[in-house]
Amino acid sequence: PPEWRMPPRDAPWVYDLRIRGMGRIDQNAIVAALKVEGIHARHAFKPMSQQEEYRHCKVYGNGNAAVASREIVYLPLDPGKVTKESARKAFEVIKQVVGTLWF
Image 1: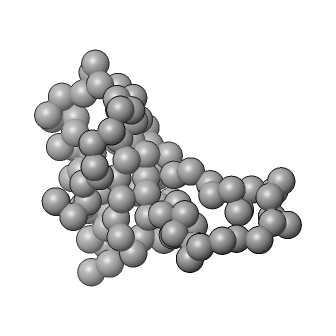
Image 2: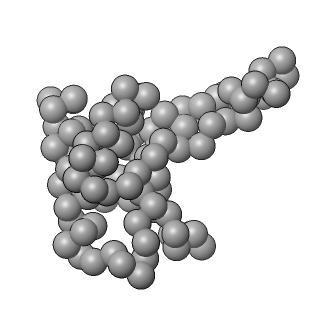
């Protein structure tokens, strides 16, 4: 769906999928379901404010990085091997998991 699309960027080795309102449990379910289907995926980045070395530092701003880290899943699909069918399969798995979690 259009609301899941990320802006284009120069990282052809990984696709970012952001689903607004998704939390860590939803991320775990999506990553696990994709793994069962043989599609490699992983959680998004860990914000600096949540990394051990920086936990003592004050967080500036409104916590956008923490929210984004819970709403993004990386799909490291090899661009040389990605087909419309493999991409479609990944998104069908994600839609199925999201549908069972949110509806």
